[in-house]
Image (cartoon, rainbow, N blue to C red):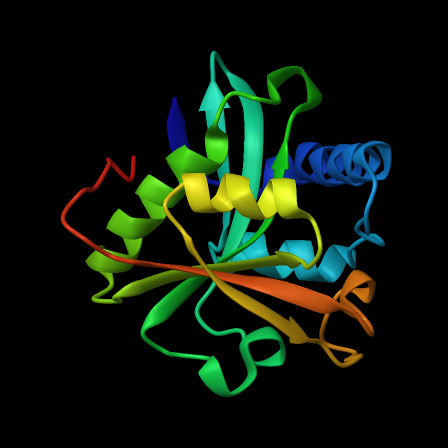
Length: 176
């Protein structure tokens, strides 16, 4: 398993995985993604904030990071954190624990940037997913209302987000 930046040539696969993630969200219930503006994805790739997990030459998982998230984290937004977004797993690879790998990688990556926190959010109300993120080492900090905002993907509009955080510690994995 290797975690590396998404290349511009991977954009179609990245979009396919995001679409597959949306279909999975629909199948398990709850609020699903409402699609993503291609320019957002292109910006993530260009700014080297889009990442992929590759196994046996197959992109099995993708995610993005940002260095602030004021629309979700509001007054708790911190420049001392990296924020994980848009985790999507190839349908044939569900259940393999990739979020745990992402969490370990993110802790090391954040540490390499002298950040002390790794954060993420998800739609509030999915207790099973919340528990999974806690099992991956995140602390659940509660939920916040999210106001509609043109800078956020549509699925955030008028909902609540569960906030998760972990401190960057000494237990770290290779950032590939």
